[in-house]
Each structure stands twice: as structure tokens, then as C-alpha cells.
Length: 420
Ligand SMILES: *Cc1c(COP(=O)(O)O)cnc(C)c1O
Ligand SMILES: [Zn+2]
Image (cartoon, rainbow, N blue to C red; front, side, top):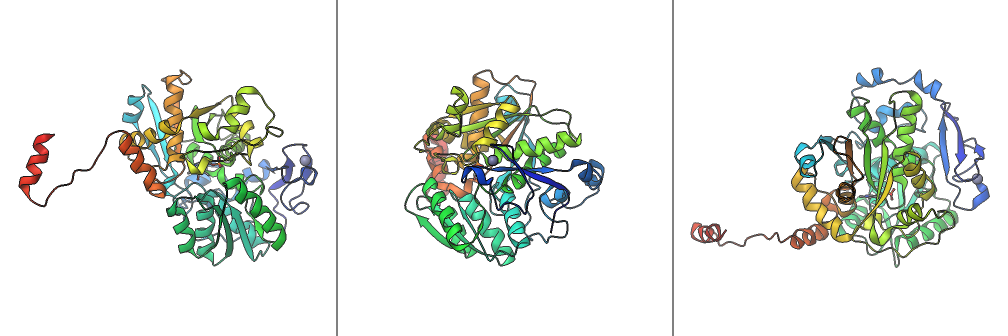
């Protein structure tokens, strides 16, 4: 059952190393906090996959990188097409910000319409490797929808915990895919705590972010894709919105893999964007506070997917930013809403608030002189705008965009056109 390209799992707090079958999820010395980093034997991996073999691999999904993922070579993978999302070159949007090289990576194009499919795909494979009967997760909505859809594709039972305030579209996805859905009367943080207790009580496979070490491994795959799509010429900066911090930590991991393999020759700076009402990591980064002892904050933001009072993957997220000499950026809800139509009009990519937040972070960074015009910049859209239509409507109303109501005759149309 061993996976021979995994060296060990290393605790991000104390550095203790474990074989994958020695621990269930976390380092036993720190309660639920001891998140592990999956470490690989890159010499072994380099004999199985190279930029050259990738060039001839027609599989566009995350499984094209299977020798770099923490799964057995012969493990079956779910049929949904996860990964392989487009990286759009957006010269007009770049010019509007005084930049020369800007790309938008659109993970709103995943099967359940968010970045979380990358992690949930790995969760389903890992759970089936050990024959788990039920998988569970807590989520602000997207991780849940991702797990729900991926499970539906292989007939895997699952139980989901989301705050009852989650947007309707996300709850509709869960119910449609046939998950058992618990709408928790509380915040995401409350849903997380209840899900952890439930997993323990019932022995369910636990997909939770910042706890299950393999979720970062799924989330690293966009780092691979961005670099491969840029012909292994790594960008200077990647803007990523941050809630729990698993995406930014995962992308950091993917880039570290590529750097260790010698496929890229420098590390992009990772720019973590938080909402002003949910800025635990931004605060800790600015003040130098230890993320392990900093108490939770009360989180409120229109960007529900990055609303996290206690970011569960905060250790990896902080390292992603500090080790790459990036920055955390904090944007207001108004800036996030403004970014939805700005990104959509400049690139054709319709993002939910948390996805647009990454673009709002770029706008803010340009304004503050954090980026120079020649840098090659990638903005990651993490979720589709159709996930939260009511926020999109708020966003266009805020900038004074209205539809015209017209009677079905040319006369009425002329009247409106004339008044414009
Ligand atoms: C989950 C999510 C994020 C943030 O990811 P974390 O790993 O929690 O930092 C950002 N955008 C969207 C759309 C998400 O669903
Ligand atoms: Zn430890």
C-alpha cells in the first residue's frame, strides 16, 4: 500500500516526520493543528515525468501530473474533468492598469465551478484507497459542492456541513448531487468544528482543509498548470484570494515541487488577498504575530468563500507569502464588488466575489506601487460568478449599470435609444 514516491509527511510545527500509514491526518503532538507537509522523492519522480513526457501527454486534467500527486499509480481517478483550466492573456485589462503582462487563470471553469474540485478529487481517490464508506467536509460552500460532485461521479456517500447562510446556488449543488447536507446554524468556523467532531464520532474520511494533508497536494496543481502554460517560464507574481489559506499554500507547494525538479528556475512571489472583514492573515503578516497563538477574529465579508475567522491552513499560507517574499493585501467589500464587473469587462471572466477579490488585490497593489509595469503577473479566479448571482447584481447596481425595460415594439426601443 505504500506510495513509493512519498518520502514522508513532515509536521509544519515541530518538524517530526511520519510515514503515511503511521498517522491518520495530523502530527499527534498538537491536537488538530499539526498540519503535515507531504514530502517527495524527486529523484524517483524525475524518472517518471518530465516536461518532455508532459508535452506528449494528451490528458488535460490534474492527473497528467499523477507521479507528482500523493496517490498510488494504479488508483482509479474520478471521471469528472478536473484541472486544465484556461490561462487567458489579457492585454487590455493589463493596459487598463498600466501593466504589460497579465494573465487570468479561470478556475470558474472547473466541473463544479470552483478551484475546490482540485482538492476534492484527491480526497475521493485517497478515501477510496482506504475503502472509506463516507467522506465528510465542512465548507463555506465550494469545497462542499466540489466534494459533492466528485462523490456523485463515483457513487461515494458523503456528509456535508455548511453554514446555513451559504449562497443558494452552492446549497442547490449539494442537494442536487445527492449529498447528506447539514446546514449549520452558525459560521463556517462553527461548521468546521462540528464536522471535526462528527468525523471522529462516526469514523468518516475527513476532507477538511488545514487538517487533511493531501488537500494542499490537489490545490498545488494550478501552480503546475500556470508554469506549464507559460512554457516553464515562471511568472513574477501570482495573486490569490485567501480564506483558510489552503489554495495559496498549495500553489506554493506546487511551485516548490517544480523548483526542486529544476523545471522552473525561480519562485514567483505569492500575493495573498484577504477581505477587510476577514483579514486574520493580513493582520498577522503586518504585525508579525504568531499565527498559532493569535486568537480567531469575527469574520464578515461579501466574499463568503474567503470568510474565515481562524484560517485553518494558516501556517502554510503564511509561509507561502513570507518564503516567496510576496505580500498579503487587504481589500474592502466595496473593492471586491467593484472588481467583479471590472474583471468581467476586461477579460470576459465572470467571478464570484472571492474570485474577483484576487483582481481587487492586484488593483490595490498597483495603486500602492507594489508591482512594476514590466512584471509578468497572474491573477487566479477561484470561483464562477454564477455561484453568487445576488452579489453580482449588487456589484453592477453599485456602478450604476441597469437593464432597460422595453415594450415589444420598435417605437419604444427608439425612445430609449434616443435618450441614451
Ligand atoms: C475556498 C475559496 C477561496 C479561498 O481558498 P482558501 O484555501 O480557503 O484560502 C477563494 N475563492 C474561492 C471561490 C473559494 O471557494
Ligand atoms: Zn508536530
